[in-house]
Image (cartoon, rainbow, N blue to C red):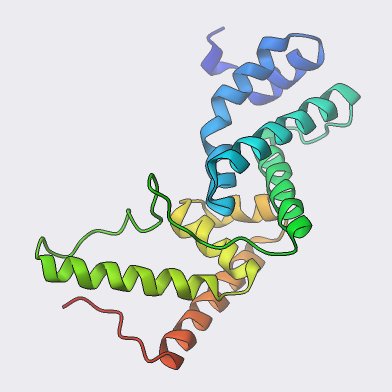
Length: 195
């Protein structure tokens, strides 16, 4: 059987039976999505590496102890573990994550430029800075959904699985985030448009 045809459940069962390479296959299969979901929240490569590693230590311990019962939902289960570790980290610091750009990643790189006109580019950069500041002012649960949905390209189903809330709650948080962003734009009398 080709490795790509093997399901997550089959690989989990093989790992539990002692086949170490099965876990490696699971990690390779899901590494990018798990790591990205961590990085989008913490915005720090070293911290993301640590939380990613801690996530799989927890996965291994749970699988070996026989306490895994998430049949068919391995990725969602691992994403939930990673999410909880991120929350634990920020609780220990007594603060919530802020949206920050780094040299290698900008959350607004995915927005298209309207024109190659230098003036428009300058205006768009200013708009991006203003939006980043506004997102940082949102309550954590709303900021988290905005980041996962728009910058992590996650579906509301994936967001609900990772955060442990219903899809309706995730949709509600996004709705309130947009309402709050509009209020903030109005309060600060910002004009966010390139024409």
